[in-house]
Length: 396
Image (cartoon, rainbow, N blue to C red; front, side, top):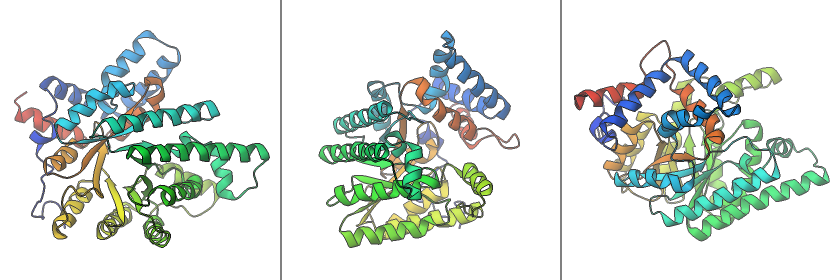
């Protein structure tokens, strides 16, 4: 079945609802930005130039980035700056998932800072009814190479054992605080060669903190051919041990890196054979979570229109309330507004994933967003196409 064939429960083509939060000038600015991002050569050049300008502390760099790509994809440079974004989203019945956008940290000082920022985001969430969840990376609080060793089962040196104890303490402090403040926490999925270690830690936290309600969520990357089975076994383990499963479903973020590493190191790639296999497993995972919604709290975190429609249809078929607290939808801030705001208008739990942080720290995130929106074979991106349709509707 396709969206064209379906008797639509919700219409993702309604650009009036999708962009009613944007003024005419903001819509024109978004059209210009996505048009620029539709040029892969320009994106590559701009990314290189932007990084160098920031490195050299050129005076125009931060201002130019802030007024363009940063404002499109980030909520603010600090928690307080995100309040305006949070309020705007809530005016349109849309929730916010906060994410401190700093990446690739390596020192204890950096890890402690990430922990402190995550604790502050949880406090901020408690004060905002529209911020039910914050997002975090385990590698924001634990060293990547150490997680590799843990996964491989390599015996740790004494100083590494202490380092690991410190990492686990940071993660536990964050989860404990989230429970006290009744704010959920999503732990992102990462590369497959550290994911088993991450899974063990997150499962430990779920067992400890998800007894009566779901506070801690693991993330399942469905472009891996083993994740549907792992989702089901995680649920069975949760039932056996007496806790609720938190499951954020995504397609995945490291496909090229995963395939390249598997080829270099001569082991079978963990990635699905093709997109159809990924889509099939993703939608099967959605169905599994909805069928077990009383013991799984899930988030359908995708920009795929069919998968969002499929979940909405499942709720309708099973007569589950659109706003059941265990069933959620999420898209990145600045993208797929036709999905998020139409779901929100339909009374579903729809949220935007809103990164924040100093411009220098969120640059890797922004470059990924720009690359995602670069065109293939010069075709107009879906984002730009929808924005142009709304501009035509408004006669701009």
